[in-house]
Length: 423
Image 1 (spheres, rainbow, N blue to C red):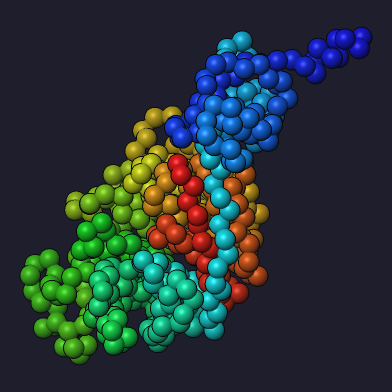
Image 2: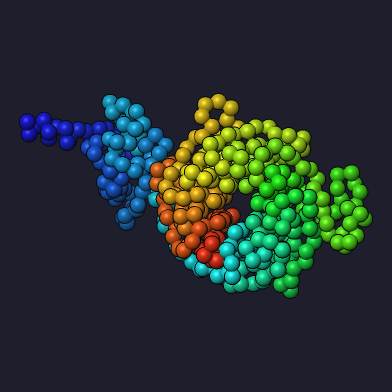
């Protein structure tokens, strides 16, 4: 009896180590290991092989991919779930582990921080007390702007040079405002007040060449606006002539698109003329901004609160009311539209943002007070919980690869420094 149990416990499997990170390559001959082996034991094994076959003598932390997913259980459990036959030699790919992001400054505001955007070293925040703020990534408060008459729900940078910058704020007061900032003098001018929505705005997004912006609101409309200083609508008539009461600052939309049944909660440009929106009506829609129509629709079973698109992976992540984050291929016309489900938040997920330099990484912020860093190859567990907020996380941003930034209902912005592992 004892020997059969021993055999059960020592069932072996053949594996081969492979890596795309050539500086860490080890000989790729097959090795026999226990089926019960886990990540930490594989790590010791690779490090031993590295020391024997290369000049690397320090221990390196690796993550292990089998069938394109990180090993988070024993090898036996992982391959059973993936329906892999154990008769074959199994390729175990290893990558250097992503280092934990380091908490940096905490930027204190007077009210909920509901919008945040980063451009190089500058952080733009929007609050429930109707104000905009500009900070440096080192935590220095640069400017406060009494911007709107209702809470600000979204902000975005349009352009930045050494001396000047422009950005947009979108508010529940039904307007979006385009601002010019003279950095040397540290003064701002309101350039255009974008009017046309009939209810509060929720989302704003700037296109790739910075010439257009899209806004979405509680009136269910998606509107496209020019960001340029030449204030003309589509038929060439200057809007300033007709709206002298506002000194020519009022801008009207170039195009209004109808299709959602409830509030538009998130917007992202996915191409030169293509916008993807998420809505409380349980759908995401892909729009052609030139033709003004819907190209494609993705239906969910809960309200969507935010989306982001990665030009690197050409995939969309969507934040939802059921605590899950879903990864979609927006162009997929066959098979399941949901490619991956990410489950670890315990309450509504409010905000999602892709890394701009790594096709596998994104961050999320939720009502459980946490921002999380995810790798698409590890759907059941986030890489890291970035804790610090004492109330709901309302927004997050990762436009600058060096900083993950989140704003919350605890009136703070938290900054985490990301030390990019070599991928």
